[in-house]
Length: 394
Image (cartoon, rainbow, N blue to C red; front, side, top):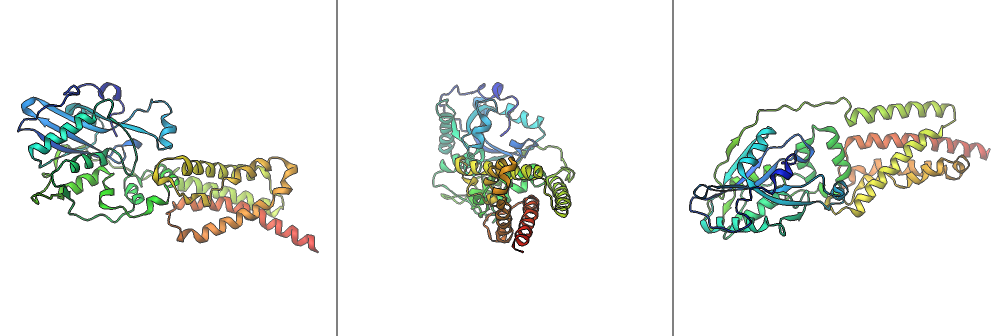
């Protein structure tokens, strides 16, 4: 997931094998490389790679399944749609290691206990997989990424297979990723907004290995099925980055920003409610935001290929129809005809608040503050509508 800054310089140089298979010497080693998380959004979960080293052949290459290019056409759209293509790059290991030193990210190595035949099978596959016609794959954050590819390449080329002997963490997919960014408030907020109910099921042990740290953890105790020996030797530290403390910043985080918004909306709504004159500008803005948020989530739910994007129950408090209401509400003469939408929306928000504990999706606490902001406005309108209806009957 790293190497972005020098991507075009690094990726396709130093393919030491020039795309051709070759015979390893008896001194060759194959290792899993695990890199600690970085500060960029794409690196916050860490990284995995495979190292093939043969001192007799003066060969030391990193095989990296985490290569992507921000400058590729429609990258952002394709990423959101789950149509991002990653690729396998192969280049000198010293170049790979230097990248992580510069980024101050620790690098760990687990040399694998493989037979000569298995080492050859691994490198033959990697050389084939790194060819231009084979290197591209469809990236999937939870189920097909740089870490899962490393896991599968090793497991698929061990005669008799391997068994993971330790226990799963019993965490959900959402909890697993939150462990890495719960202090990065806006990233945590945004991911909870987009990642849907599928991420709230408990991950299996193998599924946990979409995270590089869990690949390292589970391979550390995994056993070969043929002889019961550990598949990996003890972890070696290739580079220990200086400890970095990430301070928790509350100021201008989602909790503060949306709490202030709630207070502002509540204040103006109360004043207008007392005067029995609800000004439409605030309604148009709030319902417009609600509807736009709902449309965005609807797009992700319907069109995104990411399996964890659907079903997204944030659509219970972000309602696409609110955008149409906001547009109609712009015209003064149409407002009386659609005013009962306030009442319908308020009732729907109450249903959301009451049912949320029983929904299979976990909601970020700030979502309830945002929902309350919309609800306050709809409730005030509803109460005024009921009062006017009651007065009309007298």
